[in-house]
Length: 553
Image 1 (tube, helix red, strand yellow):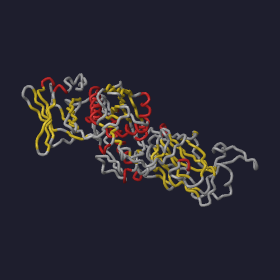
Image 2 (cartoon, one colour; image 1 turned 180 degrees about the vertical axis):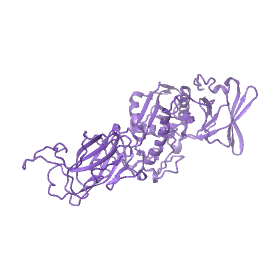
Image 3 (cartoon, rainbow, N blue to C red; image 1 turned 45 degrees about the vertical axis):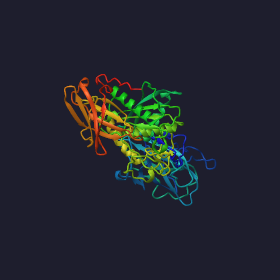
Image 4 (cartoon, rainbow, N blue to C red; image 1 turned 180 degrees about the horizontal axis):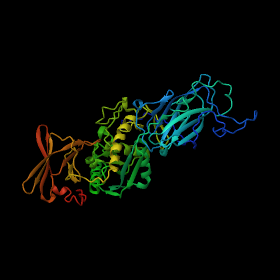
């Protein structure tokens, strides 16, 4: 991720509320008609000083429910014009076991008098149980999308976000004054028939994100700085959870990683990503696990003089990673500790996004390279209201841009949400397989070639997916001690944020590393064949041990 002098701010039009979930009560009585129970409403049981009898809630007058939205991170309509929103009209997935906001949008009559209304949300579960959420809200006018407290809202907790859950919603007068006003037709409830219910639309999902946080102990020149992983762990967990359709984010803290080479250039950041990738290969975790290196370079600008657009690179991913188990070796990225927690966390979400297969999103004056032309919204806007289930802030649909862009402020668009839902779902499904996932194949050779021609190579366990696109102009030649020569077509791709080239090729079957005489990558440039010789001692010589290769300082 690049922080450049052309970075723009669109202005954060968000509202922070004190809490997501109002008070709740549970009941097995789902009757939504007028009740004789004085405790049914939040004002129930109070005695009017003039007339004496307790107030009994009646259906709200002169108001209608026009829309209901679920917002687990991006707004999804679940009720419209008195009925259910069919699947074809849903814009995004609603994961199971995830907190979410339920918003109710109201239209009031022309002669509306500001007053309190009670909103009741009844949840009906597949096992036959029910739960009623109820709260009282001051309604002064039509609901304003940018003002959370201008209409009823509820916090639906993760335990209640279950596949098949249905709901019904109704509005009630919460105080005296409307007894002589005619009862509305249709009544202010959704669905209109009090005995019916509509589906929330929670997916039958298992959505886990597993990240290993690698804190960097950095010492070079006048800068010696360590990262406190205990401080960052909960912040990073919440940041990733808020903008990803997951029901759980697990951040595991790794032992500190020592770095003594300079982090004042793109090359230094590229070296760190290479090192974290080699660390991942050496430890050989399960393929659904991401690695992220967090470092503090004392606020130095990384890439001065050679950064894209003259800016500073604040993070880098090993690649825009595919969705196969064989792509696990590139689920690696790193980011810088920045002047604010928010900027540090934005970089983290962005770089992990690359390793989830997400490309940059265009925004005006952003300057990002390799943008995704299939993004559906102009100028990178998120297009629907976003909501943070941990910070309780709304994100404006046209004043906020997608988190894979270079502009700000950022949030997750519903388009991005759906794409990452599919990736998280696939990787999470591997956890449910009967046996642990072991790397197959004879291993892979991984190389990173910098723009100046310098390169670094290592081997890692695993193999290639059968559908990996191989380069027509890049191949790797393995010369063995017995004179045998093996050629393998390579997979080639550019790293985001930095024009280093990733080269991956399968190792020859049954390769004896000690028998290697030479390894070289051959490629075509300007119609001429060129090659880079990879000294065998730069590679892992014992894949069983997978000890890290010492970097030449």
